[in-house]
Length: 326
Image 1 (cartoon, rainbow, N blue to C red):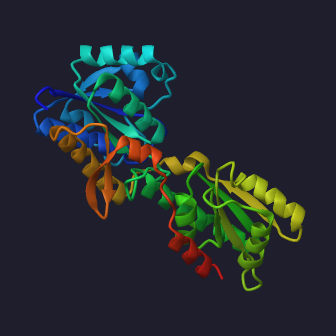
Image 2: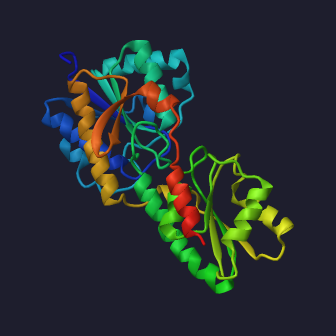
Image 3: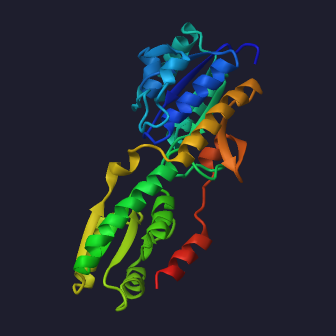
């Protein structure tokens, strides 16, 4: 801890609402505790290309309400090589940066873990991803905002679905995790959610049609997680057209709409707590850990657990959706 005088911050991977609130919290908590802070633009690529500037408290004024990330984000193949990581390390040392706070998802924390192990460099991660798929935390930064965006979109789609007595497949993000689809379906009163955690077969599709599009309803909405496992909304709609031609099927793919927008109060508070906790963790000589939230308490989750352990969807939530869809 005595060796840490300057903390670097970067955002990496897909952007998520609340990242700016986290940047703000890390910056101000670090300055409050006597550290210098340097912002690194465009993720790991910015370390290699030397896009590093000192941050003062005014650099993070009036950003808590903003979506996206003021530090930008980018992919960096060079950082995946030993030579690239060596260059990144040399640049960090040249700028006097003694520790990093990395805000991002699974891939970002994987890169952080490799770099930290190679150079014995203190890194603390913050879970910034709308997918909510990192083990060890009840919620990730951006998930609640994305969930609310999905709910609002479905509320609007239901108006036209009801008017035209249609079956809508709505595709949401979550390539390997169905949290957005499942909880979005419950929040919006949808009839079903098709998620990668549960394989979808033809007979299950038949059950979905029979149970989800009853005579007592004049429309049905099904959320589908974008995934090779589910096949995606377009593939499912095509199957319905071929196998159940009596249904009027439509597809809406929400896409990057889910990533944008001003973060909810929950995400702003979560990001602020986690950002402050990241500085606390460095002061406690923690490294190679992700800040998580469990039962409303801040926890430290080793990178290898957050990355390698699978976060399971709740069977109770699946059962609730099934019971409420009649």
